Amino acid sequence: MLKNVVALVGEGLAAFELGVVSEVFGMDRSDGGLPVYDFAVASMDPMPLTTSSGFQVLTPHGLERLATADLVAVPAWPMHRQASDEVLDALRAAHGRGARIMTVCSGAFLLAQTGLLNGHRATTHWRYTDELARQFPEIDVQPSVLYVDDDPLFTSAGTAAGIDLCLHILRKEHGARMANCIARRMVVPPHRDGGQAQFVDTYVPEAHDNSDLAPLLEWMLEHLDDPHSVASLAKRAAMSERTFARRFRAITGTTPHAWLLRQRVNLAQRLLETGERSVEEVARRSGFGTAAMLRHHFVRERGTSPAAYARTFGGTGTPW
Image (cartoon, rainbow, N blue to C red; front, side, top):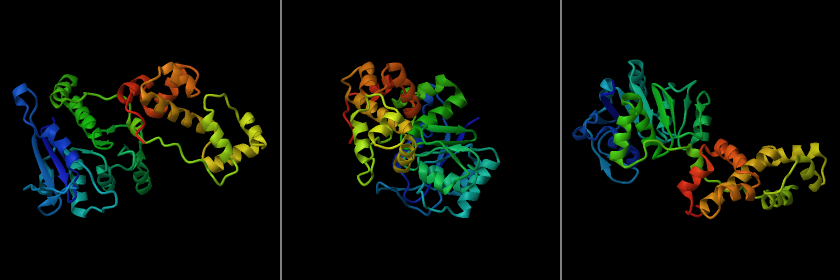
């Protein structure tokens, strides 16, 4: 049973991520019949701690507080900061006696240093997933999800995804009704559709100005709603199909089919953000032809449906 929760922080801690953990597990909601936790903030560094926002935090607790925790939360961690042996040993000891460990955003980098994530799935903010995979190749990094439940290890994507993970842990502990009540008190949805792929910037790469395929790539971007094949594209590029396929992969890093799909999803995403077109029209304009085909590829690439994405982002305009 989850009763004792500790947030482990250090110098430069992220205020919002700590606030998320504190809001979920540190608030007394007993007036509504909701669970109350023995919550504390523990520091690995001397006091006072200065947050990344510039203000300071004080706590009387050190690493010894982890010894009684049922759940240790790591709100964030600098990607290239090496933790001390004392910190890593404290986390390993907590895991060894059965405590759960959760991370928010870049907190996954600290947990990764313990070696506990080796051979397990994990995630972090989409901006850092490549770096996590580079530094720790034995981790199965999941770049598109909001959180990963590999109980007793839990990792979440950036910032607000920590709320999603905290509520998920509450659902496991107390059931959906209790988690929904706490979400309602926090004025947040109890569950969000999709993954973090829907929040990733989708800038179209600059055409490869120095490549012999630059004119063709620009033309393809302007004609995404036309049917294309390797044969037709190779003919337009005045190459054999074999040479064209080899040159295309060398320049773009992928196949013509995969490149077209990605650019069509990018275009569909931008069209959905305007809120001015139906899903059917977006499907036609982006080259998918039908709403069913658009939904299939959009869900696979963005982790949510075109309709759900339009409800969330429609009318916002493009973010760049």
